[in-house]
Length: 497
Image 1 (cartoon, one colour):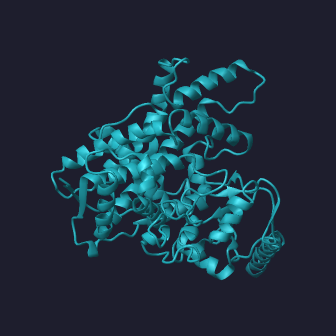
Image 2: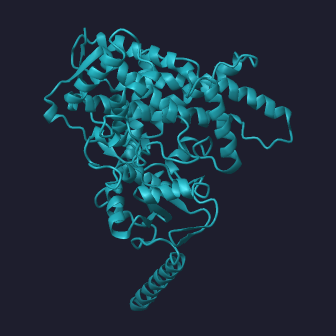
């Protein structure tokens, strides 16, 4: 028979040996890496990160370890960057080095490891260049896109008039309006606010982002190989987006069946035409495959519609929370535009208060607080630390948008962050809601145009009232993770006659 004491001794010895081996390996690897809390085997820094929530824990660690530190998401080491100066260094000063996309397990499953968001190297360059040029051809960043946004803004006005001054939650309708702009560019169509199937897709999309931003979604990103098999709310993330994916695939099929290469209608048409051209050149190493078309179309719609609609929802929430802001905006709109002419993008140059308010809405709503993870494409030295090629690095955009060195009252809504002493609009280097550098969000100009025309048109036609006392109106996000999720609220739309 085995001696129990000997077995125990052997097991303890083996455990100690592997623990020392792990510690030695980790200590050797972290010699030139930024400091950070010691990770446990398999768990990494999970216990430290979940004590106060992922994002608050990372921000608190920045206070302890400095603007650059190392965290282990499971077994995956990631360099965290906080504050304007350090993030600027990563995204701008060393932007060409940190141009790769790091690991995002939840999106890798979304997009089947395909498409623009997850692409790297030549694949990313080809897809980005093609996407930028194609979207510009269809009006993004140009005056030609103004008309469909103006038309969508009028659809919003008509819908909100139909609520007959009754309290109403506008989030899903605002989501539909935002989605229609990108849907027109990508799919060549718009959806009615009464389309129940489409409204369900948008509702499911929002719910999916809520679950991604919850602790369950964060756990999935840390331990994807384990969480894939564990039951929980995170298992609903992917089924919730299934109808949207099917809509994308069905739209691509319809485009193929009705394609006229001489007259492309939208982004999908242009991609299909490029796919045919690439087939004719057998020597070309192409990225123009069906899987990238599905993933990129899905990605542009998901990113463009969701983030814009969340920003718009937060904007309306701030308008009813701070009615004095509306008074000043109404005065500026009446003076510059009047109450009958449709707002135009060029009006923005004469409306510094509205311009500043929109910037402050984007700053304080902080829609993507954690930004998107990057990866080093070469070995690099960052503030004396030597990061090997392939190191994941996460610039926390929220720490830029709330950096006290850039903003006087970073935690409070303050339009003076973007107005000078003469009431003129002023830029602020800490304004990075779209990230920065060559991997900047390709839809920045579209979002800016949408927000201006939507907000200006709505406030030209309505006074927005809270259904409860504004003092009791909660404006804190219900979830903070990948995305800040706005709370539910109701608005009364009072026509300005």
